[in-house]
Image (cartoon, rainbow, N blue to C red; front, side):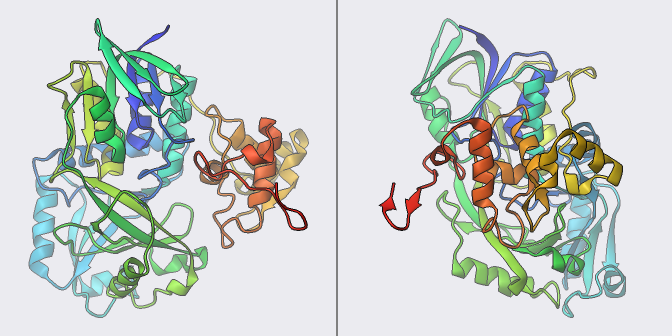
Amino acid sequence: MKIYDTLIIGAGVIGSFLASDLARSGYSVCLVDKAADVSTGASKANSGLIHAGFDAKPNTLKAKLNVEGNRMYPLIAKRLSLPIKKVGTLVVGSDKKVVENLYARGMANGVKNLSILQRDQIKEIVPNINDSVSVALHAKDSYIISPYLLTISLADEAIINGADIILNFDIKSVKRESGIFTIKSAEKTICTKTIINSAGAGVNEVAKLIGSETYPIVFRRGEYFVLDSTESGIAPLTIFPLPSEHSKGVLVTPTIDGNILVGPTSYESDSSTITTSVGLGYVRENSASLLCNINLKKSIRQFSGVRCVVGDDFVIEKSKKVDGVLTLAGICSPGLSAAPAISKYAINLLGLNYAPSENAKKIQPYTLFKNCSKPEKNELLSKNKAYGKIICKCENITEGDILMALDRPLKIQSIDGVKRRVRAGMGRCQGGFCMLAVANIIAKKRKIPLEEVLKENKNSNFIMFDIRGGAR
């Protein structure tokens, strides 16, 4: 049986960065997740912001790795052919002293291009700023990116460079003998020399199976509104209130795909990603203190994500109980921003050599038909007539786009997996008109019955119903 150099548990953005970086550094690596796709947890349910790094306390891993990660992202996006946009951030309010303290913290963290703006300067950038706002911190070097397409692209990159990714892998046991770990699910067995536990909300459950340290995790739920692209003009950049003890506050931000996000909440919860009327009401009330014209009636979706908080800093440490185990816990905000630097730090801490090859294989970009030039469209149509059939009218996604997503290195068979890759179902109707068509394309491509197509994870299959004869 193959023995991997490293097994990574948890296929969020951190796990996928680790898999790609290790594979491109020449190691044999396996990435596993109990879900049916990568990026199904916190990595899909956040604001998609690459923070500048002024918020974290100086001399913490959060501060160091945020600033380092921020500076890595432009080249990473270029390597992966991912859209990324430098939009900048405003932290607004009326307490000049708090803004000055944030500025000083940012300078201590090594953040560049920070400045303090007065009201007239703020209104030049955001004319519809709330009347109560008199002062702001302006950070020019923050970005927006698609967090789930980033994670997916890293997983694809890991695969073409030799990594194995095993989904629907729910760990049942872990044993270590003669320096080798044997990890079993109900159906499969994996052997590895080292383990990286990056299981997010499940990090303690995995740690108990390994016999390594567990951590006092506090879950904090964050609820959001997603506004239709018609509202994109209300916020040209990311706008935060002055932060509280537990949260950066309810923000308004553009997304890389042209929508507006409003949220999140931040309150202690379980690990479920429900949305509540109370939470969404809180977002509605607090967002009004930022901008004058937020029309939440233009919301096309509400969602939530769960932060896994362990104290005031990231936990990235080797186990003192079990040799060859590294645990990453409490990777909440700014986890996405710090992710590439976290990967580098963790690999070196484990005793491996972070040295991605410049000659590593590159993935093909997720090029959508609607974004192509006319000559490019004609060329695609000449090769594949499926590009001439619109499946998702809200987002103008073709059958060819969906088939392209299904042909990528990481093979998936879920509707939400297609949605995250090419945006079929992310428009105004949220899949109301195209979901069944997408499911049929998946079933035909994978040569499986429609009932085996998943909406998202295990047990989210379709139920076929004959209105004359009942369920079947």
